[in-house]
Structures are given as structure tokens and as C-alpha cells.
Length: 380
Image 1 (spheres, rainbow, N blue to C red):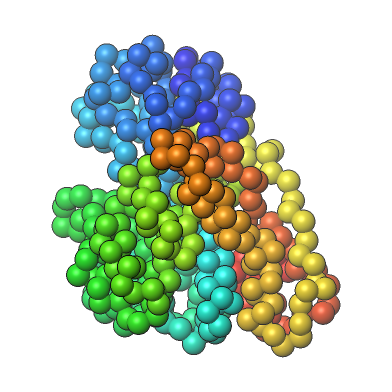
Image 2: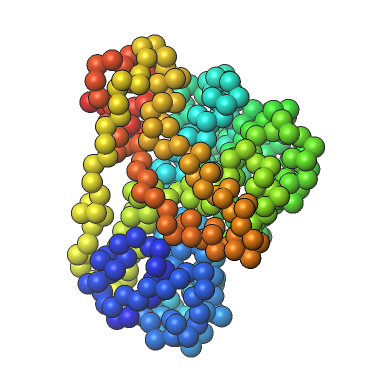
């Protein structure tokens, strides 16, 4: 079989070698003539998979190493009898850790105690539920909004979207849906944004268009006391420089880009493809990962739980590094910015998850151990 794959899917050649010959292509510029004679197509969120790409092709299976599927015309795939799989939950841990890192940075910068704040979580699926778990481990009160889950029952504690406006921090974790009973396109529109409480923090790691970027840009002209963290943007990769200049932290759609999460995505679509074609599994992500380095216990202070958590989190992943890299596009000519945005994603440095980092030494108090364990760090 011939397999066409996005060149940025990690280990895709080794994983799929047992199924056929793998050809790597840039995902954003993938064209119909490049996939016409392929049997399997493997993509990320930057490739629109629809009739325009697949008409007249031999494609029998499409795999996307993403948790969302707004870039896939699933109706078309079903009409053609083409198998399909995404990687739900593959990068959920990484995206949740991004949120925690951002909150550590902001709590230090704005001098507040996170446990004294209320966090509103929009969407409590794979990512949102992990954010909720980690915040709970830190003793943070959260309000949750997720209409689709509430309709299913068993979530009477979930609140309406408007109720989240009382929260100090709002973090967004929903798929991009334009129709149906619960559309999310511009879910956070001009009216919602205008009602954010003074000094509120807004974090979006979902999809750019869930938040009205134009309205947000206008709002930040008038309300500089707001703190905004954006990992996703409308119009990617040609993002609004005006908005980037105003947000507190801006990153190039990499919240879920831990090595662990990306390899999970590869493994999930590989397993799905093997199952679809009834082939034995011959590759596993376990063979690709090494242990992470231990956290230096010399940075810990007895009974300084908030400080110890901040030190450990930022030692593992500091979102400010990604913010600094993205802001480099501000000095580039306009025509070069989109390619730089994509290059930052393609050449993203290795980042590991909290669970790969072990807290060693006896100098850390039990409360700090419990908080770090709740975040996912390994404890010796």
C-alpha cells in the first residue's frame, strides 16, 4: 500500500512501515494529485480533507492525529466508504499542562494565589476534564459549562455559559462546531467578552474561531487590565499581529505538542489503520520514549506549596519560551509571518509531560508532594 502522511507527524515512517511505503508531504499544501494513488492518508489539523482533496483517489483510510475533526468532511468519507480515525485524548494531558503552566506564569506576574481564584471551564471532555482534575489537586474551585455533556445526564452541577462570567479565569476546551444544537463558532462573542469581570484571565487552547478574535482585539484596546492567553488563532497561519501584540501570552498552536502526546496520536491512528486493514500491530510508542530528567529538589522550600508547584511546573514546561518564539514574527515582513508560524510548529523543541519528571529528595513537604502528585508528577 502507498501511504501519504503529513511530514510533521512524529515517527510516522517507522510506525507505518509494516503497512506500506510512506511518502511525507507538507500538510498545509497537500494537493489532490499528490494523494490520488495512495491507499492511506495521514494528516493533522492543517489539512482540509474533503471531496476537493480526495475525488478520484484510491484512498481507503484517513487518519488524523488530532482530537478534533472540523477539518474533515466526515459525511463525504462515509459516502465513499472510507475508513476514518482521529486520536481523541492523545494530547489532552499536554494541553492541560499548558494551561497550568500559563496560570503559574500569570500568578507570579500578577501576584495572586491561584487557590483563591475561581476558574470557569468551557468544555469538559478529554482536555477540560484533565484541567479540572489538576485544578482540583491544587485546591482551586471550578465552574464547568458543557451543554452536550449536561444533556446526556449525570452532570447537574454544570452551569450555563453566562454563569462563568463570575469566574476570575476562563479556559476554553471545546471543538469547533458551526451548526447543530451546540455550535461553538464565536461562542465567546463580542457580547460575552464585554462582560468579562475586571482583571479576568481568558485562555483559549481549543480552536481560534471559538473566540471572536476581532472583538477580542477591540476589547483589549480598551481593557488593558485583562490577561489573555491564546494558543489558537483565527486565520492560522496568518494570524493577527495586532492581537498578538496585546495578548499576555501568545503561542503558535502548540498547547498539545508534548512529544508524549504527539506520539500517542501517531500510535492511535496506526492502531486504527491496522485494525481497519486487519494487520498485526508491529510498532508501539513505548519504544520511542525515554525517561525524563528528575526535578531538582534544591529549588523546593518547605511549606511553600504554591512556590514549589510553580517551580516544578515551570522547570518542566515554561510557556514563556513559546511566547517569546512566536513574538519573533512581529519583526518580520508580513509575507513571511505565516511561514514562520508553521515553522515554529514544525521545528518545535522536545517537550515532555509532567508524568515523565520525578520529584526526588526528602526536602519537600507532604502538602507539596500531594499537589505535585495531583498534577501528574512522579514521586519517589
